[in-house]
Image (cartoon, rainbow, N blue to C red; front, side):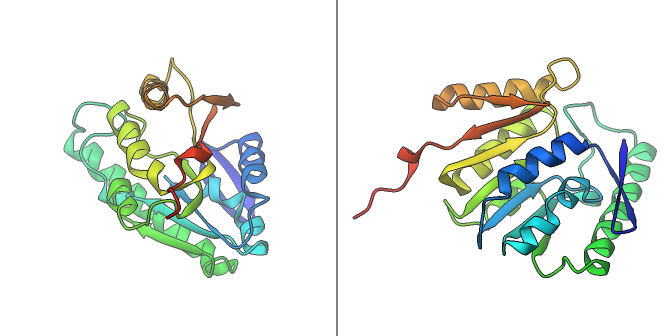
Length: 209
């Protein structure tokens, strides 16, 4: 786990400064639109783009299940009750810490917290309504594939859906799910600093009447 001091607040997570710069570059050209970050914890990933998005009028939907998490995670077997209880306690604290630093540093106006399962939240968005989607939630194969299937349709043509932890050794489920999803749609997987991305083709745009 890593930590970053942001406006005097220490935020912990698993995002590197290099990955934060990558994320900032991908959203920096957007103006007056909306993006979704799926998988927040304390908001380390979001902290790298919070100021840029506020300045450019970009609304961020921050999606995380936090303490509502189920008994399995990242493709593992069912977690023991005590381990799950402690994990949920930590996630609840992370959610509260995230909300607190958003309020304290004036980011609440353009960051919308959506506290539920990723796939359930995705259903609340209209198709082709988002300019960027970043997936960093459950890293199990089935969960990543479900997130891709749930969020890809919400992305505007010509835009990116991306995610973290492209590592076949540590997170084989991520690699397998993304490659499978991309392969069935003829998409090219771009990888940089363990961050993967897929560009939605312009031909996916709805036909005009």
